[in-house]
Image 1 (spheres, helix red, strand yellow):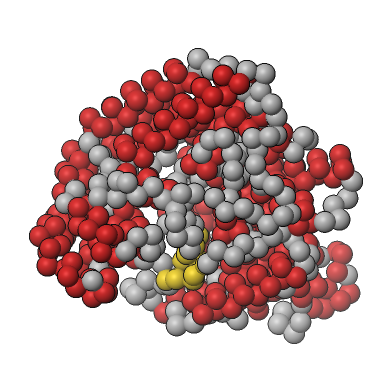
Image 2: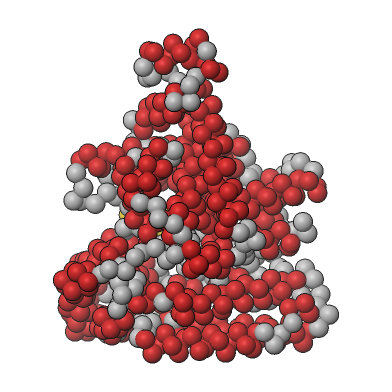
Amino acid sequence: MKAWPPVLAVALAAAACSTEPQQDEEFAALAAQYIDELAERYPETATSLGDHRFDGRLNDYSAEAVGSGLEWDRQFLARLQEIDPALLGEANAVDYEILRNHLEYSIWSAEELREHEWNAMRYGVGNAIYSLLARDFAPLEERLASLGDRLKGVPAVVSAARTNLTDPTVVHAETALRQNAGTVALLQTGLDEFLAEAPQMAEGMVPAREAAIRALEEYGKWLRDELLPRASRDFRIGEPKLRKKLAYRLHSDLSMEEILRRAEQRLAELQDEMYQTAVALLSDAPPQDLLDRLATAPDQLLAADRPEVIRTVLAALADEHPTDASIVEDAKQALADVTDFTRDRRLVAVPDEPIQVIVMPEFRRGVSTAYCDAPGPLEVNGETFYAISPTPAEWSEQRKLSFYREYNDYMLQDLTVHEAVPGHYLQLAHSNRLEAPTMVRSVFSSGTFVEGWAVYSEQMMVEHGFGGPRFKMQQLKMLTRAVINAILDQKIHAGAMTEQEAMDLMMGQGYQEEGEAAGKWIRAQLTSAQLSTYFVGISEHNDIREAWIQQHGPITDWQEYHDRVLSFGSPPPKFVRGLLGL
């Protein structure tokens, strides 16, 4: 591991001394064994972590493997419970709780959630293929050889899917069908550019490549003609399962009820904050009668007038937007701007690992508009990909325009803050430099911490003046979206919220364009518990900062504070609070 610049050390081993060194040694050995066996048992996970010992294999998706994995987790949990966490050093005590939570969640998922029976997206192999091509962690010939071996396993994955998917949902099957078509395209044409650089590998790969394409084409036909017609399972996982899943995924002390209460309260507050910001941005765009009312009695506007003010300002900002042809270059410029600002204001140390803005691969589309593909903690090539999804070719011009009005120039800046600097790319680069007694925190990173930091980083940029009121307006809109995400998560999966009710909430109080809201409705169905990570995460990051200020006084060196928060890797925020001594 490379050493981080001298702002703060990241080693946690010296943070506390254990009264029982033997317990620390036993835990470290158990954690190392589990992670080593995890890589061998789930080779696709190993590749994503940067462990390339098993790149020639795909995961075993059979029902037998699900049962075997369940028993394996049970055995490790039993061994873990033989260790007393109270006798561990501070760093190991945190990692103990993270590993325990992971094992319990994995066991519960296999026993109770049973996604292998209803979630067709689990069987997509696009990422397993693409991950061997995207980074130069080894010579291309070696990576293509591993790819050829991995392609030989595709028919077995398809066979497992056809056997296991006994109770499918429509939305997961439809998304799997679209992503499967993207994987076929990757193998049919996308692979050619890599084979052109290593033509000696092309001939040997022909049989496996053709067999994989044939298997995936047949799988797509099966998804469309056989699985979808019989898909009848409700996509809602229900209140008991959502409660458990939130507890595991968020690893927070906040209850489900408290999360919803906070989210609904924050949504109401944001309506006023957006209105106050919008008033400062009004120009000649609003209707004259609205201007007259604002001029004569701005504090006495009817509640019904306030959304009109917000919408009017957002509509004016949305007129400045990218296109399919410009969005990647626009994102590159936004990245340069936010990076310069972060460095100049010394908000947090900016890493020097490379980051590249790319067009989102087709097989990954259908869930989000952008993502940060950071290298795993063991990866040799530290390059990060900030991927942007263009509009689908089959969209009408009207829907394309709606999309880009949502992702206008100011929203693209905010998105770049979230996904890149000082958001995901920066935070994960800090996390990958962590030096700790075990790899637990690096392998089982907290989505609550990671997503919460990204949303917090948007707030941070506004607080320090980036982009002025126009950027602030979009940041508030994005924060409103994060708050609504948590509300949707509960009211959809633990309630009976309909598509129309969800659309009304997103477009009415979130001011989202129709295309964005429609996409979020699909995502909310697909990813129960994940949408809550944003709001819960920023809430806990703000709670940590407030506790720090109460204990230490106003923050004068923001880089020192933020670097310290990031120095512990990506554990659940509640552990960061403890590690900071708060």
